[in-house]
Image 1 (cartoon, protein in one colour):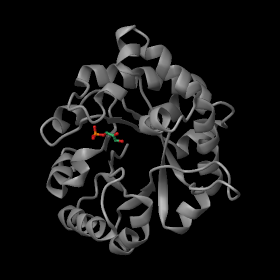
Image 2 (cartoon, protein in one colour):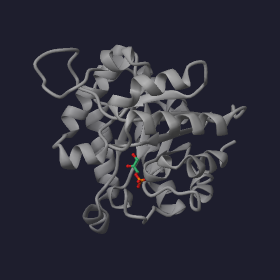
Image 3 (spheres, rainbow, N blue to C red):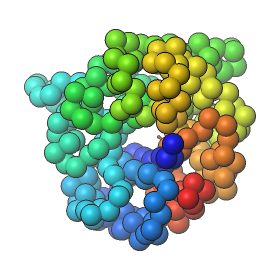
Image 4 (cartoon, protein in one colour):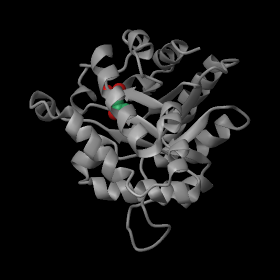
Length: 250
Ligand code: 13P
């Protein structure tokens, strides 16, 4: 399975800065074909970054998406609009969206379905809080998030979905999960996928790890069991660090 590294730029960067960063990443990547690389700039920069990436193998992702195709939803963006801007992927259910913008497992499920209807590959994020981990509820939380988000999906839908395990306590804290912790959570996810979609499909699904991935810890996370790629926040804003992270897979 081809690994996938995603740079989630969150709410950082003007169009000018975004284009400069995309250019640097693109330049540094020349010739690397053994890893899929996806950039998720802010919505405002999608158009300009798309032009920068034209003709390359780099792909774009939206950081969020609404479940309706259009309508009176002030401030939202649809899957169709993201497709029009050149996105192939969308991040769905990021913990910052769940925590700060009240997204629930149910709305995450609707967003996931909207992506699939429009031909966007969703990157479905799941992960537990520190309280949940300390209470021994990690497995329960992750399987609930997956079960609700993936409810009613046809068996082959999973071929169009990426999963990201992002423990909330590791995001932006400088405290990454250990490779062992990541492997365990990924194995839980894989088991759940097998139950829902069958062994063969589940084994082909990419499960990314995200949460304080840096140039100095990406190596051990990249080769941890069941880790098929990385979802990088802060470190993806520096081309040199992001390229070094990607370098672990190519
Ligand atoms: P950091 O890499 O900054 O911890 O963010 C991770 C993340 O949320 C990626 O989606």
